[in-house]
Length: 204
Image 1: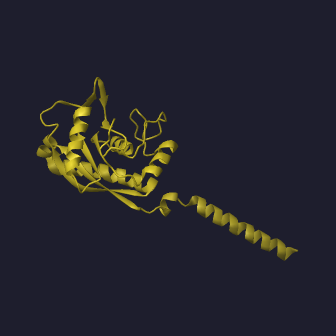
Image 2: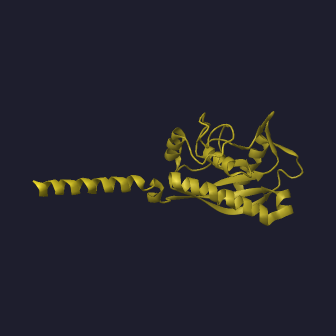
Image 3: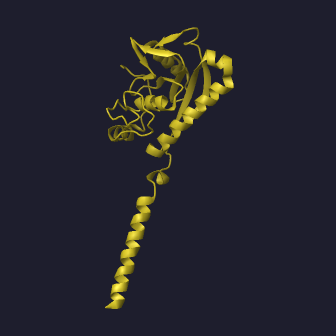
């Protein structure tokens, strides 16, 4: 009886050890990237003229941040192909969001080697009387964003079909948040659209 009891105890401890090990192992460690999204960045020409190296470095850091989140969450990587001067904001003190996005979409048509195009600016971005951090249409192939990791991640989320959330802990929260997490609903959306082909949206 004692030997049988020791055997059962050993089996029980083995099962507990395996369970704890599996639970303690981050899911992201088992996730491998299976799709690469290529990105062309448009940088406000004035910023490029003043400090091209610093501007490009900022953009690379922002894309790297978004790439880490998308790889961990969805197995999707973002690869920056080029940073190009963006003529549209030149000489303007503030930008109309619709006009800026329309121009980014025009530029996207010429970026045949990239899946998405992101326009970066540090100028005021306005939608009527509302000040925005960024702007994108759902399922589009272009977005406009300020030089901010969370805002850029939010706008890229829109390109995959993610919508605004009422959860302040979600990166898709309509107000500003420095979260790195997608809410459950938007995670499910992006998991279904990870293989989408990016194209011009027909409506905002």
